[in-house]
Length: 409
Picture (cartoon, rainbow, N blue to C red):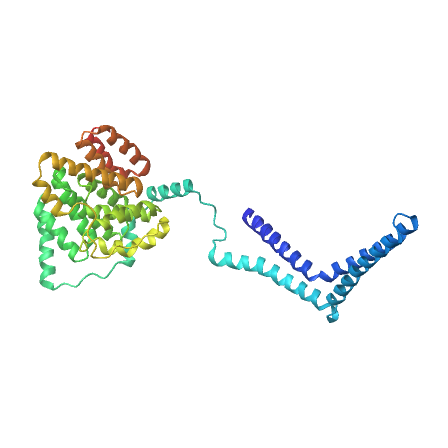
């Protein structure tokens, strides 16, 4: 209500000023009539001054001539201003003033109704961050997300009877051998091929249980992928946990980085999602599986994040050291190799300071400073990263790197 009161008062004030300006301009004949009366009064004043002996006859005559000349000009201006029949200039001014007032008040209201958000509350940054965190903490579980997505599931691919029979035999076999690692890995792959992502992620969960501490980043990212597919593209808390495990083992895992950005986008953190996806897109080869979905979504995301972003061409080289750089480094002397590493670390540090980057880049920088023995720089980057990435999922790879560098517990 306060918004409408203030906006209405401002619109009314602007309209009033414009109307007064128009009416004053249209009422020029009134000003001329006033001048006529003033000059007549001046002529009477000259006669009184002459009678009192204040001025001489010659001075009085000169004043009469000048005032009379001005009186004639004012009288002619008054006659011209009122020459139109029925006071047309004043009527036209009044009509124009009404139209201007209507345009200011009505036009402003119509424009706001079209491009504004009537009834929408103020959303300062702190409130938006709080809402995003609340959305992340209170989002549906994997089971709820799968139930919600059941009615919108994509049609499953067709398969011949022989293949379906083989998969059924595989299901029966692994049911009798719950610790058969190879069997569960095959089952997860074939269930996914049939579009049965719920069964596939259950088989992959069993793979993780069998492997235990030996499970790799790829194992967890595959699990997260199946969870998201089963939930219709939604990153559930269970998928978030799997992404975190994958990034803890390999901060550069592309699948996990993609879903980390997707989670941020789904919970109102377009700024975080854009940073993650931009770095991933610009560092990935064109045939990486996450490149097409990022290219489709990153431009609208950048607008929400307030960034003017231009998609790199598909054939743009990845950002970062190439395979040739790495191969060349193997033939360098230790001193030359260390100098190259320092140059790369300096470039990464400058890019993060000016453009920002995903958690994986911050982790890489902390780990690099640790290798170079610059614990003070690693500690400073770790402290800054905690402010940039308040979400636990984004801190996982950074915390691991900080521990490896000896600057975090």
